[in-house]
Amino acid sequence: MYAYTVHAVFTDVHVAKAWVQWLRDGHVAEVIAAGAIGAAIVQIDGDGEPQCEARYTFASKATFDVYEHDHAPRLRAEAASRFPPGSVVYTRSSGAILWSSDEAHR
Image (cartoon, rainbow, N blue to C red; front, top):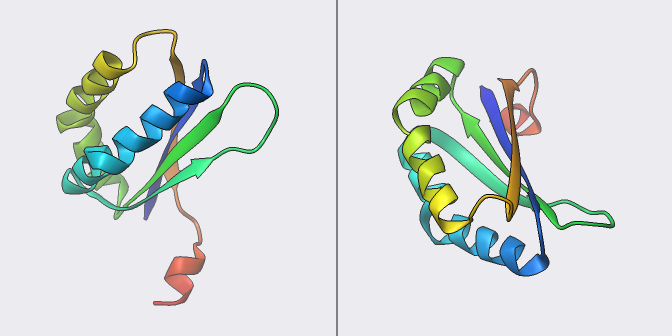
């Protein structure tokens, strides 16, 4: 199993709400259609600028690599067109899942 997280920091709460709605209205489904096997949208607690994460699970690093090469550029371009530079700052991370409670229940 392989994890991919997109962390987003927003200029204001309205942009954050629009971003979450965009994820729910189709972006997450597109990432799943492109190879992810699960997803979660998380609102990050804290003071200051609104922050959220989109957390995706892929069956393997190879599946994630196909997503990154074949699908991510198009999906990132769509995000950039909807949310102009400066309204959202992204950081991305990925890595092997060493253990998950989801796997323990299978």
